Length: 199
Image (cartoon, rainbow, N blue to C red; front, top):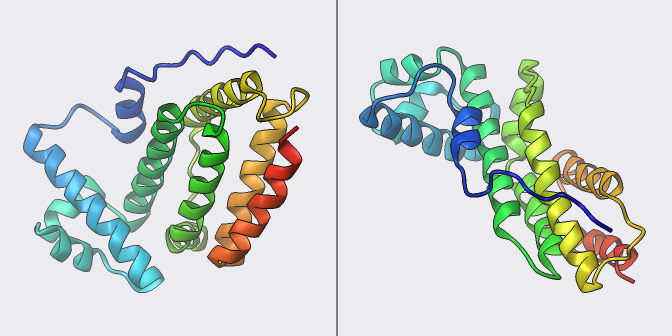
C-alpha cells in the first residue's frame, strides 16, 4: 500500500491557524490565553456543567474581564478547548511512528476521550457544533501515515484501509465518551480491535 503521508508536521502554522481566531496576539496575551485554557480544561473536567468562568479566571490567575476578552461566552471557551485538544491529537499522531505507532495512537485517543468526557458533554448540552474540517483532514493524513508505516512493517494487515481505521477510531472515542468506559473495558475493546487489525 502506498499512502502520501506528507503533511506539515514540522510546520506549526496550521496548528496556530486552528487554535487562533483573528489577528496574532501579543506575547502576554498569548500567555494569558494559554493559562485560561489550561485552567478551563481542569475546571470543566472536575466540575462539569457547574463550572463557571469565574472559577476558570480564579485558577488561571487572571481577571474575569481577561477571560471574556479572549472568550466572550462559555461556548467560545469550550470550543477553544476542543480545538486545542484536537490540535494536540494531531501533533501526537505526527510524533508517533514505527510498527506499533498506530496501536499506541488508538490507546492514547481512547484514554483521552474518556478523560475529556465532561467537556464534550458540555458542548453537546450547549448545542455547540465544532466544525473543524481542516483539522480533520490533518488528522486523517497523520493516521494514514501511521497506517502505512505499520503495514510496511507487517504489523497491520495489508488490506486494511484508512476509512476503516478512521471509522474504528471514531467509534471507539464515541464509546469512551458517552459510555463512561472504565480502563478495563477500554483495554479489552482495544485488544479485540488490535487482534482484528494484525495479520
